[in-house]
Structure formats: C-alpha cells, structure tokens
Amino acid sequence: MAKGKLRSIAVMTGGGDCPGLNAVIRAVAKTAINKYGLDVWGIQDGYLGLIEDRMELLSYDDVSNILTRGGTILGTSNIANPFRFSVKVGNKPQSKDVSSNCVKALKARGVDALICIGGDGTMASAAKFAKKGLVVMGVPKTIDNDLYGTDVTFGFNTAVTTATEAIDKIHTTASSHHRVMIVEVMGRYTGWIALYSGVASGADVILIPEIPYRLRKVCEYAVGRSRRGRRFSIVVVSEGALEKHGRMVVKRRISSSPDPIRLGGIGNKLAADINKETGLECRAVTLGHVQRGGTPSPYDRALATSFGHAAVELLAEGVKNRLVVLKGGEISSIALSRVAGKIKKVPRNHRLIKAGLAIGTSFGT
Image (cartoon, rainbow, N blue to C red; front, side):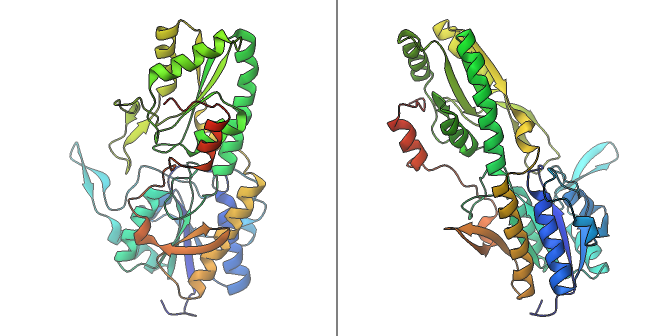
C-alpha cells in the first residue's frame, strides 16, 4: 500500500476483553473518518468474526459516547485462530487454515489495512497475515502487561487499580480474623499485576512466576509476623506463580484455543500448603475476571486514545506491519515480526522488586 492510497480500514479486538478497548476503537474510527474520510469496518468477535465474514461499517455516531465503557462494542473471542481453526470432519475436530478466506473477505469490501487490537496471540496471527500480503497494524492490549516491545499496555493500569482496591479491602478482614489471606491475581506467565498491586497495597508476600518461591520461606515469614504480634499476613500471588522445582497450577485446557492452557488455583493450593505447614488459619480469594472489567482508568483512556490515533496515522503515512508501542514515554512502533511468540517478563532487578525487598516484603526466596 503506497502512501496516500488508503481508502478503507478494518478494526478488530482479539483475545480477552480489557478496559480501554472502546477508547481505541473510538480513536481509530474518529481519526479515520474525521481526518482522512476513510471507510471503517468493524469486525465482530475478533478473528472469529473475520473467519465467519461478520463485519459492518462504523459511523462517527457508532463510536461516540463509548470512551468510558468497559469491554468492546465489537465483541471478541480468544478461541479462534485463522491459521488453525477447529472444524468438525464427521464427528472429529480438525485444524484447518482458513486465513486465505479471511483475506478474501477483507478484499471483497475494499479494505486496504487491518488494525488488530490484542495481545501476543492476536499479534502472532497478525504477523502471519502480514506475511500473506495483508497490510496490518497492531495495537497492544492486555491487562497482563506482558506484550513484548512496549513499556506498558492499556488495560494494565485499570487492572492494577482494581486489584489494589480489592486487596485494600481484604486487609481489614485479615486483620479482624487474624488470618493469612492469599489473593490470587491474573497475569498468565508474568507477574506484573501481582508486583504492582502487591507493592501498592502493602502486601507482606508477593509471589510471581519470574521468582519461583520456597514454601518454607513463605511459612517462616508468616509465622515470624505472628510471633511479633502481626497476627495476619497478606499474600498476593500471580496465577502463574510456582514453587521452586514445581509446576504452574493449570485450571483447565481448551484444545480449540490458540493458547489452550488456563491457569488458576495457585491461591487455594498455597492456602492449604501454608495451613498444613504452620497451622495458621488461611483463606484464598481469586479476583478473576473482575480485573478485566469496568470503566478504564483515566491513564488507560488516554493511552488507548494515543495508540488508536497513532495506528491510523502510521497507516496514512504508508507504514505497515508494525505494532504501536510506548517506549520511554513516547509513542512509536516496532515490526510485528519482532513481537510474535515473545512475552515480556518482570526482570529480577526491577525497581519495584528492589524497593519491596528494601522495605521488608518477601518474594518467597
């Protein structure tokens, strides 16, 4: 696509829902319509809608008054992979590459470029579409903040705020009942949400996948607090945390999903383990999908708007197959090929880990 040849774009949201998605859709559509006079197609339910050829033209009014709304007006799906789509042949499910049909559906509507809003799974498929000749622009979305190449993803700030507020409330019941309260937060294979919400809420123990914990150390820490008159402890644990030489706790597997593993249950396991080893009364709370819902924070609204605007501007300049990112406080972009198949983990020397250790927080080591 040469510069100045852009006439029509499509936008979709893939993977799990996330606060700020509507802010991106709004910025994409309004920039495209208001500044460049482009047609904007909204693809329903992520890659599933693209596979099933379900899309509609978005008007300026369609994307008005959605900035503060959680979720996505387009809908989303985290179980559809155009390059390995599950279809039934007889009574047996088989994987089929239907990506060429997706490209044809877009071309039939005169779509010049596709804006994919999503996380690592969405971007992996987006990079493959780019190899097939489709002009693609990615926008980084995930509450987990684990997308490679960007300092932060929109949705993360809201999720941390939600988790922190919940942990703050749990402090009072932990103190009243003299319990060890384990709060399990999302994050998949990274500990960004646990680290930030744990430090912000003053958690006593923070357990993340990047630092496998020793159960003995966690127990010693909780017992030590009890002996010093601190008759309760708050443990914030990422769903992907694991004991040293142990494995992550898998809740279930969904074979048709691009990422079939669903983590969950480490909070309950940890509560049982600590109780068995120390005799301390333990309770586990899993925050779950509440972290992905609700009104996006002002920071996420502003970041999402910046990302959506930048995606259209880059396409208008003739740039293609990039991921819009935030680096060093500035909006820029990197090649989609650099993002596919990678996740951004919490570095062991992260400033919040250093700060946490200095103020007496345990990371289970």
